[in-house]
Image 1: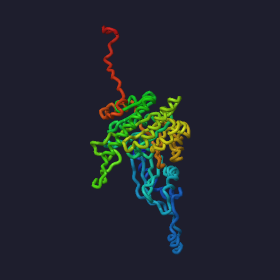
Image 2: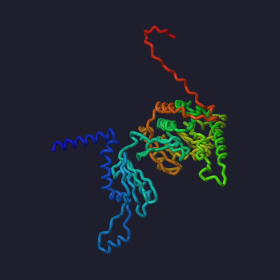
Image 3: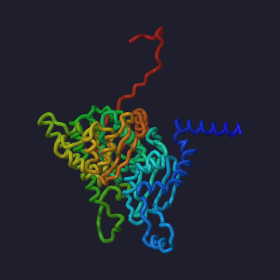
Image 4: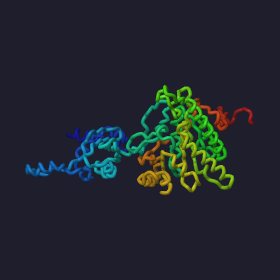
Length: 453
């Protein structure tokens, strides 16, 4: 009997240690079993308490009255599948007639408290089927990205972990242009660094505009086809990129060759349906601080600013088919930056907001998409840099957190894949000059007889 108590105490101590130090191990060993039992036992009462049940059918009430039986209880959604994962549970439900998927989204907080889980996210799979992704612990506290190898040329980069335990991807084929806003020390630069490190092994040309004298992107210059570190150079670089876009469109037009006998699969209006030997390399344009491009202090600056904004709007409207994708970053992105800025923002489908200093900055990213996303962006804690709210123009959003990619890790990745840097004739004048590596030899002892210089 004493041995049994000792074993139970050891197991309890082990569970507490794992829960504090290794929450993933605790969930896999202990938490998933307890949570599964808790969900199944409490399911009907929780659905009833949250108002997610429907009254019984009339024929059931009539049958109970005729047979003099107690009236049937309200019906909860039917469980289609309960699947454990490494971070939580996935509960798929079949809705009853009269129920709506929005009811489950509105009740996510009550479901989280009732099932004693960390987070519950609801999404509609198809008509009449809702999936609840429940996490058993805070997966954003210590971000550990799973290994997800991707084929070359996909332009799909895993950049962060979502609050439901899934990987958040930056997919340029699906969302060509994106906006990334955030205050100083919010993790915006680390997110961009992770993105560059993920793009470096792929067949893509990286073009950067960093008006902070290149302090953010210049260390990664080994993988960049073109780089501008001041507004004047940025204006010339964007003009060259627009010229390159025109050349790509001429290539697409010449290769369409639409005729009666041409199969539908060979008709193209973008670079991705061109033959592999003719397809131009896709280009990702990264703008580190868009406000530096839009600010003007004199009349000459205003002319340059109008030219820059015009080129950016043109690239955002026409660049996708030519394989040109944009990633625009900034602390603020509103109409106070001048005319054309709101037109540019309307073309940036993807939206990511790190911690912001005021609600107005969050409204710049999500005000025209989702009020709930605005509230979530304002509530990001200062003690968790890298946490952000990611959404798109469809209204969907989720909390994410990027792993901490150090500058050394990003530099090593870019240097390792420097041979993949393509050459584009229009952008060749803006090719970054790589610094000469200085090899430091062995330090001579102080009492050495070597001559002093």
